[in-house]
Image (tube, rainbow, N blue to C red; front, side):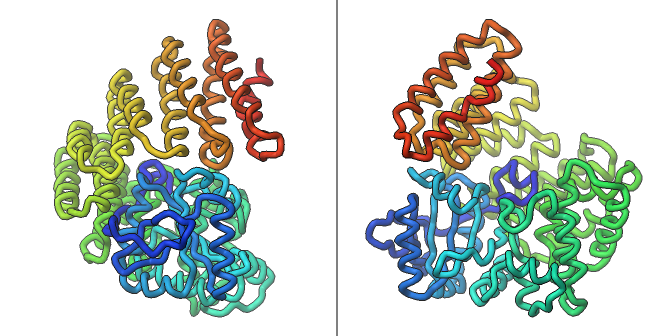
Length: 524
């Protein structure tokens, strides 16, 4: 989920109690993950598949619910376990056509480009005619999610139009304000608002919301603070206003409970945004930590959410103590909570989310050996062990053990499954080689050549295309630093050119393929 940078790093919001519980598949579609109650997923990995699903929607008069995810993705497993497995969600699914797009199926990245989706998971509601109504937030608790889903299903006006109406001073219904407040701005991909305007426009919406729509007003206001906290810089005047918003909400226990997903997911960035000095951060972080403690103690959070809350608490402790090194007492508190949550998580699919998050908590607490032990113990039973290997690689890198880090990055790539994931993991491995072992030209050439050797035309869309472009830029920087490396990059460019030439000029992938090494070609 593209919630916060912390969540994006780990791939967050976890769990799945539904493997082996496949929904009823329509002929022409593969089986999809579902719940024991039987969600009738239409599995789509190509434009024709999607068109079939929308044809079914038009025929039935039902809206379309599109779920974009991946097998390895911890947030996707969380959504599956805590939402899709619920009887009330299964019942609600009969009111729409549920479509599942696995990002690792051939053609899926092209579908992603069509609907402007990137981060896993993304969930979108469409009218039967294909008009996008809203993007649903994967990070809120299931009850809130179902409320947002019902609001979306009942909506007659898409979020894009509601923003225009609210900005023009038109009166919106309480349901329409709720739709705006719970819109997934993190997965918007600039479909409704440009990123550069997001904080400002969310502020305007919060101010325009009527006083009796307190939850919508507070949620939009805090979302505006979050958006500004993620900008490269913010004026001091905005920080002062945002600090008042944060202080007000932290002082309101009901508001913190209602906005739990935001307080858990964005703690570190927001505190650093609203409080510049160490003393200010200590004050705000202390209040934030107290709020997180209350949320955990209330007992309303899932295990995945509790792990994320502990992670945020570790960040707050570092700000309170003004150090990156936790005291032994703080470390033991983190270990105790993590151990309790991991032990309580028995479902293999839920563990795909909880265990990597728990290991991240331990690593952030400075307990790299403990984090490694947890991840290694999980490898034999993990749904997607290659995801856990990235955590082991990251920990080795933090220790300064480049060879161990590269070994784990390579294993993660070689054991990864699915074309999009293999491109992404492989490109990442090449980038890590360039950073950690730049003198090893042969290893870099072999790895990059292997990545390019696997790709098909489907690779020139979405996440795969971006991964290839990042790898090309990395290789170009590596070439620029040492002229003797030019033949290696030229050979890789020639290899890709051969692949591009095999793609029909009529295929839109051809143009994207030709552009992968464009920056390198310009610099040559």
